[in-house]
Every structure is written in C-alpha cells, then in structure tokens.
Image (tube, rainbow, N blue to C red; front, side):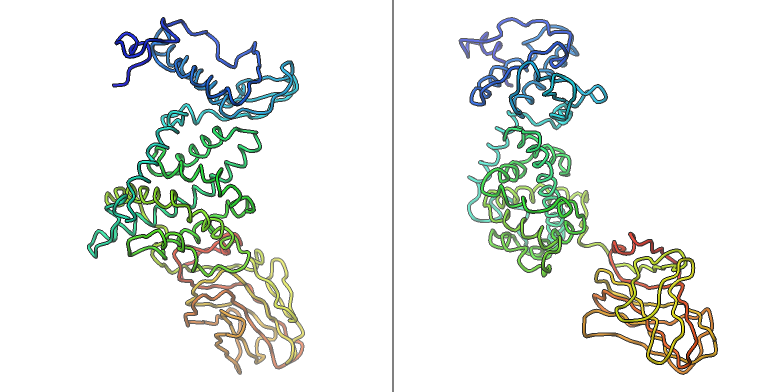
Length: 489
C-alpha cells in the first residue's frame, strides 16, 4: 500500500510534509472568475508540479468524499494546464475559462476576454483512463523493463508469439492482424493530434499526454501501454518529421490505412517476427507512385526501424494474443471473399461512367448513354474505371433504333493497357430489353467499357443500365460513392 506524505511522516518514514493538516477546498472551480494569470519560466514548471502532487492525495483535503474528489480534480486541471503551457501574453489581457457550453473544455483568451479559443480538452484526463505525469513515469519504466528484458529473441518479450506449427498459430496470425491494424490507425491519429497540439502551442509533455490519450481511445485494451509511449516519444525524437509531409487526406484515408496494415500483415504472418522482418515488412507492397497508400507506407516504414518501437510492439502482440485466444478480436485482412451483384441505373445519373477518348456518344440525363447517326466507323463507347477487382459477370441493357438493324456489341473487361477480355456478338438484332453476358473471371480488372456500332447510317442506341458481379471482401469505394446499388440476380 502506498502511503501519502502525511501518513509517511506519522510513520517516521519522511521528516517533512508540505500539507500537515487537511484544509477545506474552495467552493469555486480553479478556473472560475475572478482569475489571476501568471507567466512561469518553463524550467520551474516541474518543480511546481511536484508541489501540486501533494494536493492530489485524499488527506490534503477535508470534507465529504465528493468534495475531496472535486478538489483533486481541480488540481489535476491545473497540472494539465501547466503541462500544455502556451504563449505568455500581457497579464491584463490573458483569461482562462471553462467553455460555458462544454465544461470539459478549457478555453483561453489573449484579448481580455473578448474572444476565446480552445486551449485543452481535459475531459480525457477526467476519465478512468486519465494520463498523468505519474502515468508517464510508470510507462517509461515499463518500456525500459521491456528493453532490458529483450535478449534478441521474440520469445523473450512475447513467448506466446513464437510460431510452432500448432493450431495456436491461427491465434498468432489473428493477434498480428489485429495489432498491425491498430498500430497503423494509432500512428495516423497520433500525427493528427500532434498537429492540434502544435497549433495550441502545447509543451512536449502536454503533447505526449495528448498522443497517448488518443492511442488509449483507439486501442482495444482500454489502457495506456509501453508501446504507446514508444510511439508518442518517437514523434518528438528522430522521427519528428516522418509524418510531417503527409496531408490530412492521406492520414484520414481509411482504405490507405487498411492497405498498409494488410500489406504488413501479409509479410509477417505465419512465422515468428524478427526485428529485420519487422523493419522490412512494408518493402514489398507494390504500391505505386504518389498514391495515398504508398506515401503512408513510406512514413510508417521509417518508424518501424526504431528498436524500442519493435521491442514494445512485441509486448503489444503478446497482449493481442490473449484477446485472440479468447475470440475477442477479428482480422479485417482475412475477410471472406463474397460475390456482390451491383447495378447502375443510368437514367438516374452517370454513376461514375465517362465517355471514352475519341469516341462518339453523350450522356443524357433521364435517358442514359446515347449514340446517334451511326456509321461503320463511329461508335457509342463509354466506360467505368474503378479500383482493381475481380469481375465474374457484366451486362448492359440497351435499345436500338431501328431495332432490326444488324451490328456488333461487346462488353469489355480490361485489366491492363494492352489486354482486353472480349465477347463480341454480331449479325443479329437486339431489341430492347436485351442483355449481354460476360462470364469470364478477370483478376484485378479496373475497367468495364462497352462498344456499339451498326451497319446502317441513321440508327441510334441507348444504354440505360449496367450490371456487374464482383468477387471481393467488401464493396469497393468506387461503387458506394457513385451510387451503385445491389440487385438480386
């Protein structure tokens, strides 16, 4: 049992106490008006915080349990305010207050109270997962213990993550999948939080507290871990600029996060994870150029070279293994492949379709894609271009005037610049409604396009519906954002 300073003094352990007798707490909040702002040299803040630590003990206050808890909470608010700091301004112009619409937000004013801006959301510090300077010391000690415990082998930190060709290897893969997805999300959210802390002018201590708080809200364990402190401190060490060049759009791109996490998972699953394998796990993803997933993978790959990140990640894996063994986590990288039947009703919009370069035809709202005055050298040719998927079926519904004209129609599923998979039907009429079936699987296709032409001038064709079947773990974003709907074949 830990004794307070007063209890230690009574027991003869310490010869002093800065608070020999409990006092009644003030009846107002610590930031309620009237206030008296003071600027403090940053080198003195740790000493002041050390004195304030005495006031978070129960025996520093007298009153009911609720009154004592409230007093301690107010002191915690002051400690957080000291940690995050801010620019010193004229004492006469500086104000602090609780947001009248949200008492969990600390606001600051530098113009005498005319305008207020958010200084810190200290509601995170008032939860059961509150992060304090004491917690940071404990986390640093736990991290150092892991680093001391590591002897070069995975098993020295994560004994349950040593693969042994038993059924438990499936749980190890599940733990790995869960941990890498969580890690990627935490890194992205930490960088977003870091930018907020910089904008607020927070101290490094305040920023680290904010970053770990974000990690706790994302992590499945519900508490801070040594891995979180390793990541948070990396943002202020040799890796401070690693994520700086990434746009907010990249950091918030959920698909890019999933791509990076699952690439790392695919590289590491099935075998015990060495430091070298961990560092190189994003080297073979095959992401192209400046795509979001490529840029995100490049930033995270640099973080993976830090030894404390790797060694504390092993501890994180050990914790994830327990959750996996209990059936409490799943693996988004191993979702079952399903067949999705999707339809685009072209009378209600283009649904992402575009006209092919150098071809005829145009989109008419309420009608669909229309081509008129056909000859043997002009065509109605339009296409849908989407992320690579596997297509098992495609069809288009069309009408032609005159309906007895002969011609050629093809539905093409394209997976590279030089390769088409075609099925061409010619020499017969297709009165409305008519369908063209394409039943050959094309791996990683990224385009569906149509071609229509007739052998008689003056004819026209209208395409008003497109249907495809795809094999995927989930419906790709292209189809959801462009309003495709599912249909029953």
